[in-house]
Image (cartoon, rainbow, N blue to C red; front, top):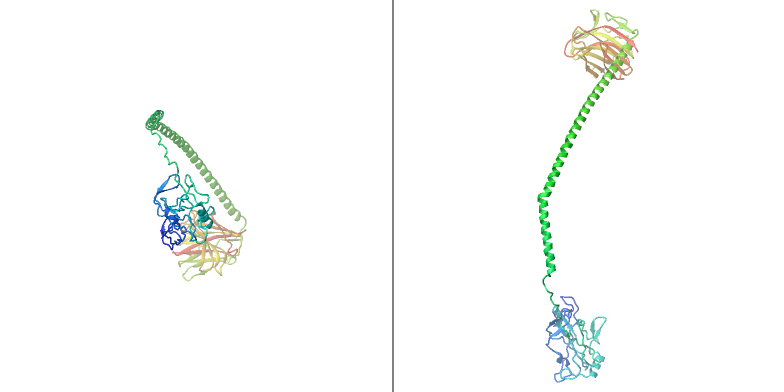
Amino acid sequence: MKFCTNCGLQVSPEISFCPRCAAFIPPALPSSPASSSDPQSSPESSFHSSETEAAGFGPIQEHSQVSKPLAYEAPQNGNEGIADVQKVNTGYGFEVYPPTPAPIGQLGTQAVSPTSASQASASGAFPQYDQQYNQYAPSSPQQQVFLPPPPPTPSIQPVQASSHMPYHAYTQPTSPFKPPRPRRSGMSSGMIILCAALAVIVLLSGVGLIVYATVVHPAQLHAQATATVQAVQTSNANATVVANTQATGTAVANENATATAEAQATAQAQATVTALQAIYTQAIQGTPVLSSSLAGQDGNNWDQYQTTDGGGCAFTGGALHATLFSQHFYVPCFAQASNYSNFAFQVQMTMNKGDEGGIVFRADDQNAKFYLFTVGHDGTYALYLSKDNNHNMSIAYGNSSLINKNYGQANTLTVIAKGSTIYLYINKQYVSSVTDSTYTSGKVGIFASDNTNNTDVSFTNAEVWKL
């Protein structure tokens, strides 16, 4: 068996690296047989000792029982020397050191002469200590023993020996380690007085803090809260007064603004009505190009025909009647000799019975393309755009108090067409206007419409003014 030279772990002979500390373990050297009769063949036997060696390991001296040293066999060349090493248990592992040689002449019972020690050192029997690599290097490659250097000790005393001895012995320190004296425990009288004074100060500070926290500070907080509430109430009262004043001013301003806006709107409406009324007044000035009482046929060649239901266009009782007895139909009566573009067309209409009646303008009667201004018995009016016999659309619609809704009462209807603008008047008062350029010129005429009731409408005093 062999041991790790670093930590002292016992390992098998074939192990080369320590499994505990990973240090390299040199191989065990074979031992040469020694004769018991030759005292010079085993001089190391005199150095086998079980005495306790002092192992220097820092400032505290630790002692351990020295185990059996690892034998070092010198080459079998007859040289003499010291070949024992020491394995010391330091408490942290095992350290292997070279043995301490005995003085010359006291190696067992056989004396070692300086001459023989010198010859052994010169011949390489003793391993030399290499200061560079911290190990003992044997003189021959067969002597592969790697030993770490001995740990430092407080003092190293060489053995009185011949100058030819290659080793030094390590001895225990001459003076033992003395622990420091323990200090005296306890406090001085000055320190006690100081501590008592500090305790009194701390106690008084605590009492003052308690008084402040329970009496003084709550009173301060209460006073601050009271002042804050009073300030908030005063601020709210002031804000309320200001808000009321502002609200009053705002209300007055809004009323004034509303009144002003209404006045402006009224003025604008009046101005607009005045302007629109001026358009009517200006349009009917002068001599009309068409003027017919519609008491009978004249040069305008008004339509006269009878429908299958017994209605149609006919002069009766000094007026041109448009009569219809079929629901959802209308019957027009055109002045075939007329054709106008920009004009004012006016006629008097009397509802005798039924639903609606009105005037036709810018008409293409062969293709049923024209505008129809209609006034109903229910007080409504409308402007329709007829595209054919089956399709028409409303482009203006409304209710007017200007309409006489009673049967037998006359309503004067007027249309002013100037370019794409069309103005509508009932009883010579403006009611609406539109902009449409679908039709620009055509015939004028009158019509009656039956929505749900048989209708008969009579027309008189037809007039046209060119614009």
